[in-house]
Length: 184
Image 1: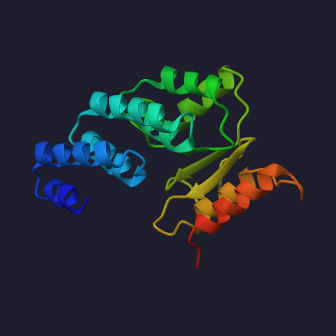
Image 2: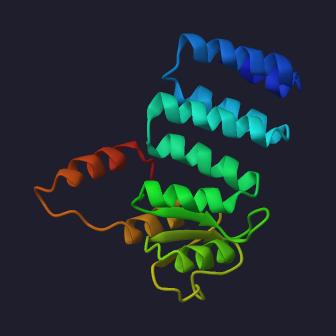
C-alpha cells in the first residue's frame, strides 16, 4: 500500500491505480485500500470509475455502511441525487451525515428531496455556514460545525442516534462503534 500511496503523491496516477488493483486482488477485505483507490479516482476526475469501484465494494462487502458511503459519494460527485435518494429506499441508515455545500445540489436541496419522498431519517448537517449558537431549526436535523476537531460531529451523531435500551442487541454494536472512535 505504501507503494500505491507514493505513486499517487508523485502524480503517477496510472501506476498508483495499477498498484491499488494489484493490492485489492490479493487483499480484497482491506477497506482502507478501497477507500484510497476510490479517492484517487475521484481526485483525478474519474467519477464514473469511482462509482464502478463503489459497486465492486458493494459486491465485496454487501449493503454495509462502508460500501454505501463510497456509492453515495460517487453518486453525489456525478450529480446523480435521484440515485442516491433511491438507495435510501433500499437501505435505511441510522443517520445521514450531510454537507451543505455539495456539487450539483446543495444540502438543503437534498433535505427538501428527502422530505418530498417522505424519508424520515436523522441527519447530521456539517457546515461552516452556521455556528452552534445559531443552528438551523429543522426537525430531525442535528447541526455540526465543520472543523478539523471532530467532537462537534461526534456530539451531533450521539444526539441523532436513538439510545438503545439495556439488553437491546444494538447496544453491543454501539459499544463496538464507541470503541473505534478516537476522542480527547
